[in-house]
Image (tube, rainbow, N blue to C red; front, side):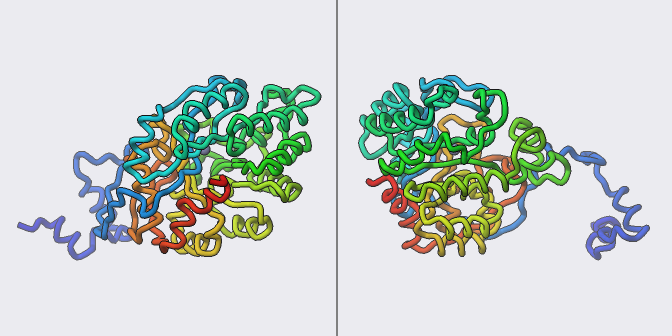
Length: 398
Ligand SMILES: [Zn+2]
């Protein structure tokens, strides 16, 4: 039997909330489970869309995950790592099991530290399983105040190279956390001349520099009702760079660009799509301006996948300078967009290889980096080959 309410919905009257009748009716039609207002954190809408769903278990070609974090510093303060000693987030055995299932030829562990911590990491992973792991070194900021730091840091890069490092990783420490007195004082700029010998050493030794200098543009705006990543920032207030003495995203990118321009013989991988995946036009202009720059896509398929047409054009044009990477962190279950597991890789493969529509960019109930879903970009085999491994293999000289 059709009730009066169902009949009204059927003819669309109930939805015409602009009329007096509709407004009165919609209040009356609310059922008992409904509340007048629903907390955003409790909202988990389920898509009613029925479209093709691919399940991509293995990447079409073997891949190199250029951006992972297998080891981290045991001591850090106010965003600055202060110890070379490493904590290991996953054993080689547990990582290799996922790698073999998911067709991952090698993982690049960007946060290998320096000195003995680096040497130990290289021995445990790279040397123990040749061809499966590559470790990057990091600056020793704890010595930043020493008067000959520029020279010491360049020498540390030479030692790291001898110890087996395959590149240098710069976390956003430089530009957003490192200060004149290491954890206090004014912020040190990305193009500070004291780092010039370090960039030059990397160029001379053919070590690529993976550099992270900024964050999603929403992190530089107030955490308010207009912020498209409100929930994420509300859960992690320390991720906001709005206010205080933080530079703007534009200032950070400008400082990075000045530094890259000064070191044309050093190869830079500007991670997270050049740290500006919301504006691929800007990333494209920088790629056009700097032949020594490439990008990885780590933790940014949420951004790329919500602009699939622009993203596909970007991949077609810069297919020789885009690297596959995920930001995978073993046991990093707090951050589903980078939790190292089978599901994470399946989502990346689906994004790159299929034309599926409107799917989750992270294995999570609520999209963790903004409430939207993504579309696949259906890359052709030639481009997939390059992005999955050829571009990284060339940079890593393997
Ligand atoms: Zn990372």
